[in-house]
Structures are given as structure tokens and as C-alpha cells.
Length: 161
Image (tube, rainbow, N blue to C red; front, side, top):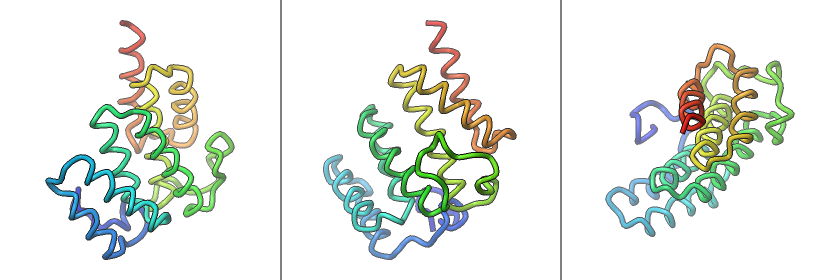
């Protein structure tokens, strides 16, 4: 079960979370930032095919304003999810027919992480990168199931400053 949402992790990320990873994640609750980082990195490195710890780690860094670290983790998450979804690890090469992004699982997590990378790019003032990521999201998710319109609005707002 995803400890953040209460929804089965398979529905969001495409697989059960091993008990050892759940213990590491549970141990982060209320912990010091360094301990949280260490536990989440341990989960990612010891279970590289398990996608939820990547999400928790890039979200943790992004929330703390550590955008370089968030980008690093999200990039690793994108690669891990691509492997699990059997799609190209080069996000630029992924095409709409490569997989079904509408069903829960690794491909959906991959798409969600692409959105996260666009968000991180906007916050890092990397407008050109954000635009490329958003263009890819528009092609792969024309119905905007992952909510990239929020990132587009943020990018538009940042361009007016």
C-alpha cells in the first residue's frame, strides 16, 4: 500500500512494495532530514525496480527546494520506470503507441515523473527544457490525465515576471 495515499501501490506504481522498503519508509516519519534522505536513498539503491521510493525521494528534495537533487532522483526514476514499462530510456524517443499510459503501473509512473521533471525545470528556470518536456507530455497524454496543465500554467506565469 502507498503510505502517502492509502491506495494500493500497484495501482499507482505498478508493483507491491517489499516489506523491507516499507520499513525504511516508515522509519523516515518524523525523522531528521539527513535520516530521511539516507533511508530513502537506501530504499532506492537496494530496490532499484521499486518505484515508490523514487517518488518519495524526489518529492522530498523538491519540497525542500533542493532542485538539483530532485532532478537527479527524478531522472533516475524515469530510467527505472522506463525499464519496468519496457519503453525507451531516452524520454525523447518515447512515442504515443509505445505503451498504454492510461493504465496504472510503471508507464503511468513514467509519465507522472516526466511531469515532475517539467515542474522541476520550471522551478530551476530552465524554460527550454520545461517546454520540451511539456511538448512530449502533450503528445503522450493528450487528455492530460497526469495534470501537466498545472506545470504549463506555472511556466506561463513565470514567463510574465
